[in-house]
Image (tube, rainbow, N blue to C red; front, side, top):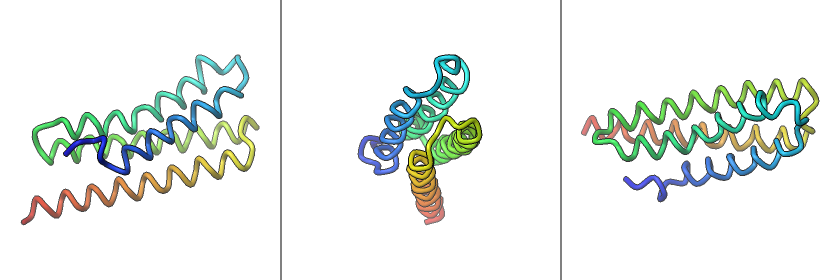
Length: 120
């Protein structure tokens, strides 16, 4: 399975671009803290999908897809913090939340699909 063919990987790349664009507007004092954390969490999602696809087994792939889910949860928490600190406007917040929800559903669907293949 080539990660570049997966819609979930493509969408997570779009999420990274969105996070980078939005964090450009964050206070410079956040550059090495919240901005950096948000970017690293976002980057972790497609990176772990890619790494899982490069592994030898579906078991390892599923493990890395779960790591991507964990990175999404981390990112969600950081988005809440950014919103609470008034670094995000409502539209950006909604766009990010929608993208995270969509990617989460895709990842869970892919995990379910791969687990189903293992049974047969």
